[in-house]
Image 1 (spheres, one colour):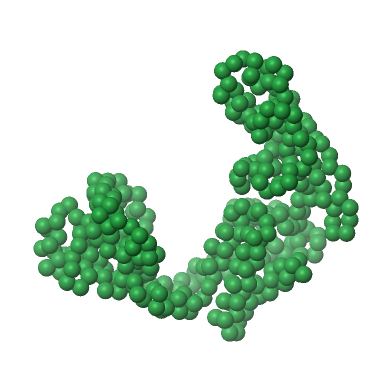
Image 2 (cartoon, rainbow, N blue to C red):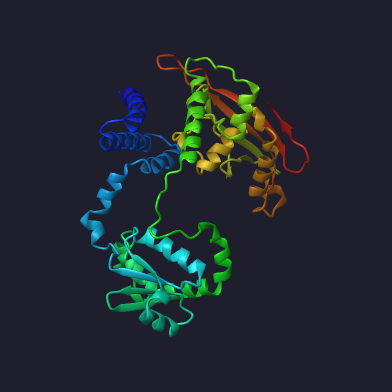
Length: 386
């Protein structure tokens, strides 16, 4: 039933996102269904960053009304920052941009922003607090530099809960040091952040007919490109159309799912030998005979997602040129820690235990041992196998 449940969510979820009626509720249900699908994948499979990235993207598809509702909840209003006014030096473009970033991301856009020079009282205070470039006002209370950052943190929905566990004295000292560093490097930081630009507060979305048309054309192209595989047979495209897709980077492939998902699985066994003839498991860097048995927990066989992807690609023929570099890496891993010549790693073989699980209801094929690389640590050349 899990298989049919996944199949149903993958069909119903996108339809709910595009439902033309009861838009808010239908779209919200669709997003929640798809997020629950990826949460299920996290709980049952090792897919690395894939489900987390999908969840992050899906969060952006919640309707505006949902975010407005969340922002109106009491837990957010208690530390909303609505009673804060952030003053910036209007002669400092970097200061204006950073105050805007703090306002939007730390205070959810609820604080007011003004130039220091617009308020005579604040301007007078500012002149006495050089080299500060901003002032934070809460009621009749004015703070500067790192103390202003501390006040923003205490009012931010993201961090207000954690400030009660922090030492105010130590945190203020750290924030003052951070602020002093920013002041010293303001010209460099200004150049690095120039791309942020300066927009009115709050920024307003302006509909653009031309951009909407371009987006519509791209959506049609993407849908058309995917429909090539809809009938279990690839529909050929003219060379001019292929060139357009490549130029726009729309020629994406999801071979994990379709049209040619991988049917192979397996694990590596790397048996080596030291100078004195001692056998060694080169992959685990452990002395002794290797085991060709399947690991009890294949997902724990690789240190992390990057290593898993690298090694699973390494056994493919099109990546055989990388085997030499990986072999040299393994030699360095062991030999750099050994000072005795007799304990140096001299040679090893990389085997891939190829496993082809059968389809549901069909028996799996016997595991096949394939030797894909033979490496000599003290020779310039090694032997590759397809």
